[in-house]
Image 1 (cartoon, rainbow, N blue to C red):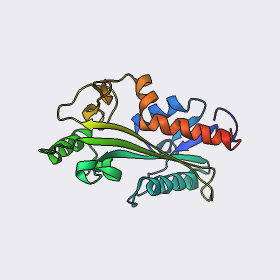
Image 2 (spheres, one colour):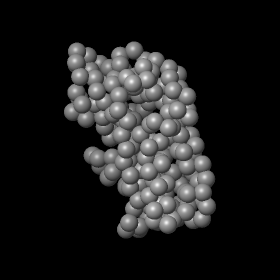
Image 3 (cartoon, rainbow, N blue to C red):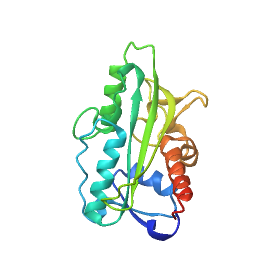
Image 4 (cartoon, rainbow, N blue to C red):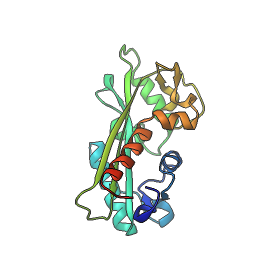
Length: 201
């Protein structure tokens, strides 16, 4: 994805953390956050990650006239029936707040013996707003939720997401290691591989 028609792609997000991670993972692509083009985010009305990603990508492509990449991701907690899920960014309501979301998550899990969870990421790439053949990939990153936050890197639920095999939270990883392991890192690499298989730049 380093040359050709995907050189400039609108990212259907204004999340600085996502932009930073995805730009590092898709380094050859000039990702333009939709806000820089004056595009307001699409209303996320769907109940699944893939449907929301499609909504966001189609909106950004239509408003910009460019190819668009949308990421819909979130934390899926088994003991909470999959919550926060697609509502991860607004789990505690508006205005969006990582601190409030994390506080609500820990409160909801009080007394729960099963702390297993995974981060899910679905990426959608559209060549145009009416593209009938979107490129879609989904990946997951498994861990457990811990009450006490650890680490100052990352964003969102990272300080409470423990990787048991490494003995650290996602927020204790450096950026390169997180990108190598994370749901978004896995999805970005899979997207690049799919495009290569399709003979696209």
